[in-house]
Image (cartoon, rainbow, N blue to C red; front, side):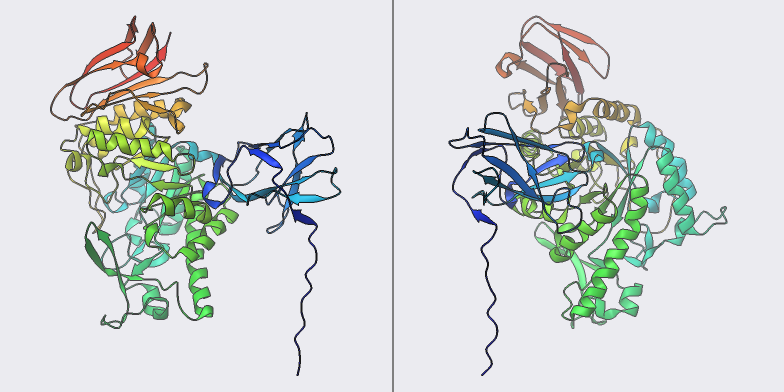
Length: 562
């Protein structure tokens, strides 16, 4: 009888230690991950129990700064008294990193692991600090030549990013989310006066965006393709089978409240194909699709949007996110991702998602929206949210909130009450009453001259760009006393050298609303000078009570100063 060999188990050079670490400045475990921007150092501190011995050492074992994937290295903490140890570490690339403490009580002769498990840090591109995103609807915007003509106006409103719905060649349904060829620009966008092919014309448009200071956000559809797509025709085995369908291919859809909406023009990509070789072919093809378009976004310092992320294959996303990050280190990845907080905190770092879409439009009333904004600030240390007024999938502000005038009060809130990432959909600046259709034949939408909210939007975007206080989380305190219509908040400065702001927005589209705020209750004393940033008017408060009346959808942005 043959006996298989028994592997040896050697004593490891670093052993499990005792509870020597008394305090840590950071959490541990995957759910307690922290976030930094790439240009911020990782600052860690620990306190040793019964410290004070000059032979004690603390080190960080981590994959930060590794020379090659899979390698880990050590960084020594510094101390002045043998009790308090500190480390400041630059992180050169974006991504998810892991680290764990180890310590020595005999100047490095023997090392022991901290009893706490590994810690995690997700490092974001610096460009994520502010995202002022304008969504352009290609089907309603003419050819590439027409798109180019729109860029100066978009930039003039203070937007720094341009979101394009998918522009891949469409199937017969004429939906941008039903691609027939994932790697081709739809020929309907070709400018006939330009002799170049449509992809070359798009590449010139990419350069035009960069020249106008606009970062491209390109929409990636990962879950499905058109039922009449090249993939479904040439490689039907790459589509999820469904014996109940006439063509044997499974259709996709989505839940809307309690109803399942079926999309007859879309078939599901089979990421769980049982044959591992075929599954790898599918994964590699879809990964190349994502990288193909990511390349154009990266040329502008931009981002990609993962459509319908909550329905995507988790294992594929765990591979795709790092792959995009490896090739394009400063790429921002935005996820249309609606799920619970626990799932977000578990998957966002694993998949490398920098930004998730917030559903602010689902909170139309003051108390609802106030509670949601508090939540967004509460989770901002782990989850960064894009907070547009609406999306191309929803109704317009007029449809959702009863009046196109709601653009004023709503944009002030989603831009200045949040954490620096916001946006609008094409047409919002002109108060369009009906949602612009993004499915169907090519047209060239001409926005009405009135109403015109471009100047107002530009002023709000300028404030967001200039003042860092609007781009941080956890510094929002409501001062409106729970008013039913007015949201009033204090954006707290980080230091005495930074200005704080008092913000007020009336959600009532019909009536003026009045508010008296006792500022002393929130630690704001008098005398106080306030400068209203939209009108330039100044207000001097001798007592810590601010009384004001706001017109329907009125907004006040007060810069605080003595």
